[in-house]
Image 1 (cartoon, one colour):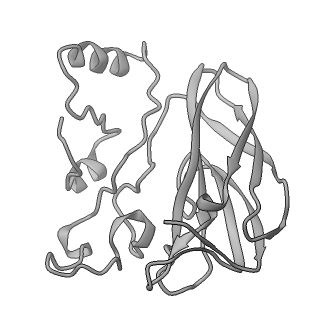
Image 2 (image 1 turned 90 degrees about the vertical axis):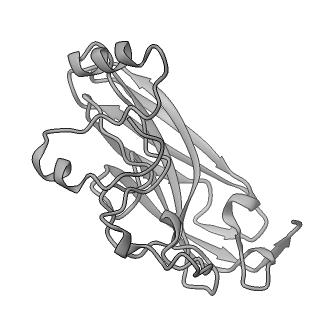
Amino acid sequence: MNGSALGVNWANDHANAILEAWYAGEEGGTAIAQTLAGANNPAGRLPVTFYKGVEQLPDFEDYAMKNRSYRYFTGEPLYPFGYGLSYSKFEYGGLKLSQLDLQAGDPLEVEVDVKNTSQQNGDEVVELYLSFPQMAGAPLRALRGFTRVHLNAGEQHHVKLALQPRDLSYVNEAGDRLVAAGDYVISIGGGQPGTPATHAEARLTIRGQQKLPE
C-alpha cells in the first residue's frame, strides 16, 4: 500500500505475485481479500514506471527529457508503465488500420480482435501505443488510446479506437506541435511494446507535415 513507485526487487524475485493496493480507502481490506481469494479478477494497470533503482533515473537537477517517464526511458524497468496481471489470459489478432499510408492531418482508425483464451471471466485494458521514428524531441513511444472491455471465458470482442491528428503528433525542440512525416508503429495490446504483454503491431507511414495549434 503506497502512493508512488517502489523498489520491490526482492519481492519480484521471491514472491509469486505482488498486489498493488495503492491507498485503498476504508473498503480496501475487502477489495484486497476478494482479489486474493479470486472473487475479484484484477485488471488494473500501472500509471507510473517502477524502476529497478535510482541509478536508472537522471540527476535531480537534470531537466532534459532523456530517460524520463516511459516515453523516453531506454533501460529495462522493473515494471513498465501500463503493466498489470489478471487471472485471465488474452490474445490479440486481426489488427487493421484504416490507412497504412496516411497524409499528415488525417485521422486514423484502429481495429483489433481481443479474445479471452482462459476459463476465467475478466476485464482487459486494451492499450494503444504509437512508436515514433527517430526525430529530435520525439518520444520513443506514447500511449495514445485505451479502453476496458469485459470478456467471458472464450469470448472475443472487436475493439475500435480512433486517433486524431493530435494523437499522431509530438512537440519538437522548438516547442512546435507537429504531425511529422516518417515510419511509425502502432501497437495495441495488454501493455507496452517491447514487453512480455500480448499485443499486435502494424506499421504506418505518414506523408507530409502539419503544424498544430498549441
